[in-house]
Image 1 (cartoon, one colour):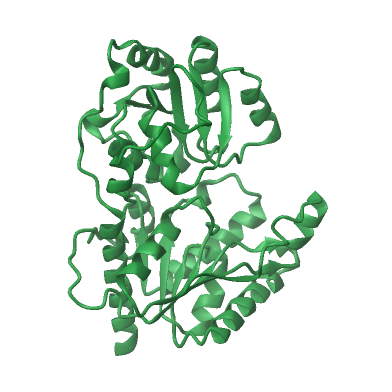
Image 2: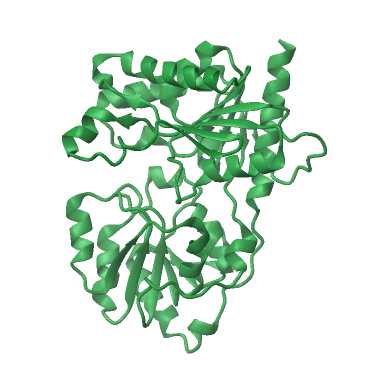
Length: 393
């Protein structure tokens, strides 16, 4: 079957944006100060539609795992929390490992169903980002959208976990009312059997272009900044080590959640000019980019990163600072807005950008980028189509 890819990002909305009064979002992203794609789109949809009620299902709290770690942070979070007059966040509890069968997933589904009932969400639309909720969503009979943001089928999971993910992915591809993807590579891999809707990521252009003060935690002196999650499947730790060793007088600030293993994190922390700043509130992120002498994107180039549409690419362009990236998806096609350098040339190119006589006062060439509001309008159009088709059956 030929792939059908549609990007309705600029579609104007003249009627209620989604024609859905309630929405259940089963997300792989938590609800917190670090705002990612799903959270941002939900915020935009709620702002666009004054009738929309949302139940946002955050990643389940694995109680046995947290207890083994000796950590009570996640367990102590409220199970249900109202974060907006029309948005509730559910953090379901997972009591059993999935190796024991489907009981864990059935339990999570029951918790979501009870929360939806408690909030009186009548016939909601279900937005599935976490494929483990596939059977729950389809069993409810509620209209369903499958939103694929990362190709986890390419990740190095144990065979049993990979088989479960693949089965859920197949089920959602077959039976969802619509499949939304964020990158051309995902459109290719998920669109070989059915039509898909390509809705890339976006940026809050005004936020990232409005000048901010230099963050207090940003090191003084020449500084290279990376903003994003540190993860072994996408972040090239050895390349960052090469950069730190070659440019000892340049401070390197790594801004974002640290999901690296203990060994990799310790290797980076051993460099005196590498600073693990940690996650920052979304509204303060522009300040880190705006005050960078150079923004660096030392990403791995592999099948998994090819499936991504990095939000940071849009943010770097909006902030307008000189940016050097490895030739990874999302950055390769930004033209003059980003300097793309192969891994073997990355350190040399970063050094050249820093040595530019007036690099600190030079902005990257202006490039048009789509706003999150445009992307939310595109998602609202898909939601309305799925609702209408479900009502016609």
